[in-house]
Amino acid sequence: MTETLRALQPAHRLASIEQAVDAFSLLRDYFEGAIIVDAQTRITWIDTRYRELLKLDPSFDPLGLSVEDVIPHSLLRRVVETGRPILLDIMDFDDRQFVVCRIPLKDENGHVEGAVGFVFYDNVDYLAPILDKFASLQQQLSRARAALTRERQTKYTLSSFVGISECVRELKATVRRFALRDGAALIEGETGTGKELLAHAMHQQSDRADGPFVAINVAAIPETLLEAEFFGVAPGAFTGADRKPRKGKFELAHGGTLFLDEIGDMPASLQAKLLRALQEGEIEPLGSNTVKKVDVRIIAATSQDLQSRLAEKSFRADLYYRIAVLTVYVPPLRERLEDIGPISEVILEQIAPPPDGSGWIISPEAITQLMQHDWPGNVRELRNTLERAAAMAANDQISGPLIERALPQRQRNNPAATHKGDLSMRLAAAERQALVDALAASGGSRTAAARRLGVSRSQFYEKLKRHAL
Image 1 (cartoon, rainbow, N blue to C red):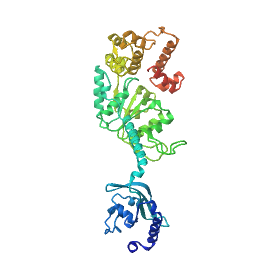
Image 2: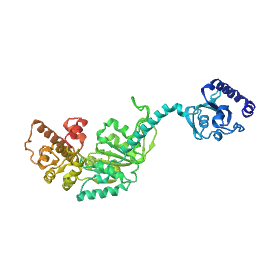
Image 3: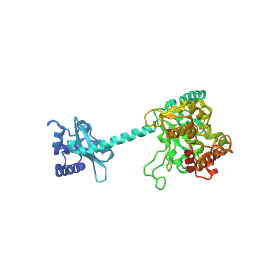
Image 4: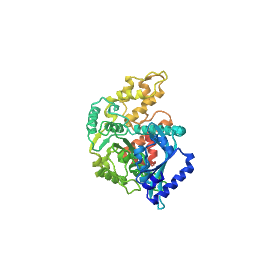
């Protein structure tokens, strides 16, 4: 063997190889076999025990052959090319598995001259506890990824938007047509009309249905965090930032749809950056100089009158025309009263049934009572009312008088009317009316309405939710 080594190796390399062989002789009690390759990953040495593990014929001489010719799944070439060790791995050979370690061999200048690999065990049963733990972690990771994928898929289809009225039939036909286009879409309508549901449906019927659906509520995120939410954050971009990059919503939605809810509340400072991302199809994470290409379809929604915002110059005209390529108007519930019955039936199917296990039964009188309400909160307020009625019901019957009790007590046609009920109900009714008046006076701008009432935006949103607005 020494003669073969000398024939294959230059003199300056032979010493390091022989030193490695001598070191292995000292450590032979700790491994089952060893092999050495040169800088071209040709086998320069292999010990007898490794030959026996590989079941090589005694007459076969592997020296000088490429390591893959003898050990097909060897990664010694990767170690030579990268100069990095692979300290623990499981290598397949025929129908067996070896626990192996691979280390580069370097000269005094740090240049890689070859690599050594040796077998710890020829039976992976030694590592059964570690492998079981690894398999368990892999299963948890797979489940987490699957759950995240489900969250980024659409939750609704067009059939989820309930209605029998003519305007709903026209609305669904429009959504089907727009789903086949890839241009940006703007869904306009009052709060609670189902704008996000239609955005899900538009994505689900588009060519991007297999891609992610990522939603972001512009109004619900503090202005200082919006840019990071949209475009992501580079490692160490600011004090306290994660050392790992964090993807923004644009990058997460790559290949799919990005839904921007309440885009009318987007601050002016971010509108220009959003416009650039839409025009160029590229983003720049916060604190990074790297530009990333993204392929997303934008579906935006607003409960505000963006035309008025344009006149006030609080919303950029160029951004508006970029997102309003395809526009969809969702009619409020008061304009399609014939849909209240079917919608109520669907909502009651989703509410927990009465104790006896039967389903809820809503009377015609109750439907009539619901149709007499003006529903400023639209379907969201209708759901709130029905849930309240179900909670107050003594049995499975949802009657007219029960609905009358469940409806929010507030001033309607007569501003001077006195509210019935105790002080807390009167105060709640007054607060609700103040919210409605502030929104009306602010042209639907929630930020402006909160400022008008002298409360923070988060407090204003909490009050809107409490009163089903």
